[in-house]
Image (cartoon, rainbow, N blue to C red; front, side, top):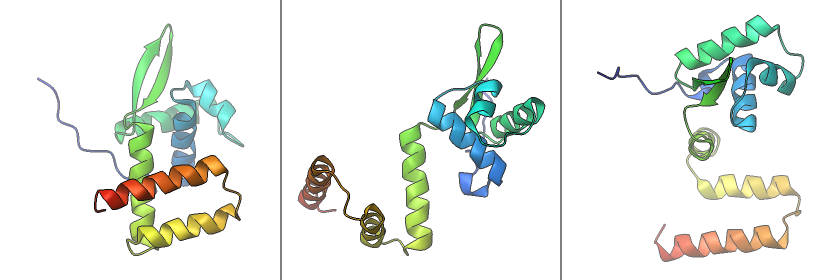
Length: 134
């Protein structure tokens, strides 16, 4: 019988170092303790990183796979789903749910440095959303 697990806590509820380690695993896709230590600035000891990775596993953010003799940590939630969830949280929290306000803020951050391909992609997305009534 499979054990029921609760969904992972939102990353916003993680401590600074936990978020830093989880972000490193997402950037790498899958990572050993040593790879995570190499990826983050001013890393704590090997055993501290291993402990935090196991804590993130216990919280439901990571799972462990074996790769030969080493353990490799892998995100439970696909990166695209995690991005959508995090962005939805930011839009709700800082933009009162307004996607337009959030998009405007992103455009301001780009300082007009969007490539033609990026502008074309955004135009297609807006056009598609309009056709779908979103």
